[in-house]
Image (cartoon, rainbow, N blue to C red; front, side, top):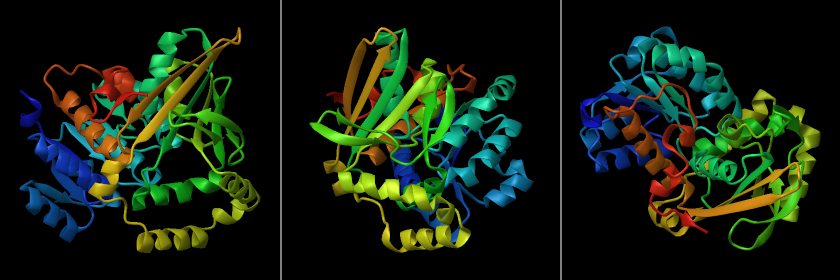
Length: 352
């Protein structure tokens, strides 16, 4: 049996990233079942690509995991994943279907990792983050671990001009009140927004950079066991100051009416980059390891636009898990599942 003979579902298929993944999957001959909560949108997407479809909300799935029945794999594209991942993961465990998603949310990665034994026992894989969050940085982390097996500190980062889709923007708004995150001595700890800054050459010249609560604070630890991890992106002095000011109003940002106001503004104004824009935008990914002796090593790659990486990466991981020789089970990060050269198999990747 090949991946073309197996049943799999893309939930949240009508969102920005979901539609890109559907297009890429169909292009390589796959026939996913498309699913989501909007009857009109899901039906139109299915008709456009000649695919089967199912319509249900997360609340409906919570009541009946049979809604994903007969699926060998479910790809969750419905963010914010803080509101969807737990329900879909539990349904997948009950139905013995592999679970993958395109999250970058630390809590989702940690939740999936906590279910490693349950997934092993059910012979399924839980592999969140099969897109730009976190394939490139996860692979860089794995390569750096090989380069310095005794590393005690890992710093990762990326310089991306990808822009935001509505879903990504809403996830960012949800994350603001939670502050920053780093891993210190093996534990995830909360720090202020933009807690640390430094100058980094991501691959396109040195820039001021600041720490962010990126998914690798979780995944890179499970991947490498390096106990101290930070993730950086470029930030102008003005942006750094603005984020530091937000530290004083984090309680306000948690309030429901503030969150709803910001998310409604996103729905009106944020559309996500078009194909021509995505094609022009590249992403530089950087990593650095240090050991107790103070030695350090760096590694850089350049990848395609983040949304292209997500579309290609999600399809590639789905193909691998649906193949007849797939034997993995339990919690996996992308590079744990498919090796640190996974990112090199994606179009537009080369060493910087």
